[in-house]
Length: 263
Ligand SMILES: Nc1ncnc2c1ncn2[C@@H]1O[C@H](COP(=O)(O)OP(=O)(O)OP(=O)(O)O)[C@@H](O)[C@H]1O
Image (tube, rainbow, N blue to C red; front, side, top):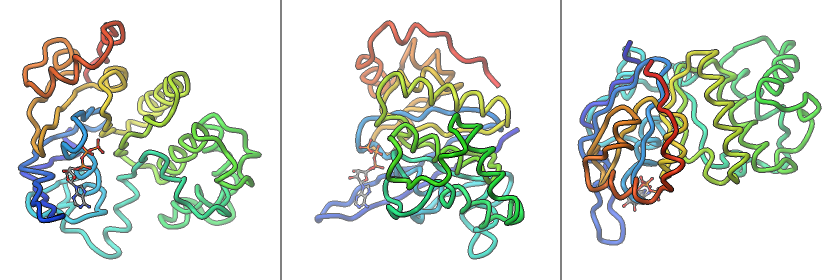
């Protein structure tokens, strides 16, 4: 079942006298429960796509249907309500939080905003979500600034799944972590996906990361999707110059991993 249908999305930026087509006719689909890996060189438009999809910046043209709804046409209270279903995890998104914010308050936000459980149930729900991402319930009272980078990403994932989304957009979500932490977070994400049927748009400049989690991979270059296919195909036999350059940058051993089964 198609969950996300992106058609001909465009976004231009004018900066310093330059006019940049950050998104230049991007079309992609994502099935329920699927991971689509999105790779591309720096500046190819990956983060712009994440920001347009999550409604942080407006598109100039094109359409997005999410769960069958005209996603870019939603506004106000309707958009706020529907946002429960599309969450995001960016690179250290919680690092920008108020240093006095507690872990509990960060995870309670979506419970409150989306009215997931009544206030009396928040503490129990926060404890369950922390447990689900591998952290003790005692972390709830810590300040968000007093936890490590890896723990912060676990908390960001707990916050993202709190509103029971059908899609999570992850933009370089594991890029700041060292290799062993990164693997653990990727395992957690795959387990959560299997348990809850969540689809991921998984953005990374690192094909080795995408090889580990993606069912399909799309390659971006200069605001365009230049290649899409099953992960094993794109990595094993890249067709476009952009995909070939990304594959060349990854050690051979890592790419010998088995492809994830198609959903
Ligand atoms: N707010 C902005 N103002 C002006 N130009 C921007 C802005 N955001 C992005 N761009 C430009 O749009 C293009 C795409 O940028 P984007 O950040 O989406 O690429 P990216 O693939 O995510 O890169 P990276 O991997 O380095 O994050 C780049 O040329 C960038 O300079």
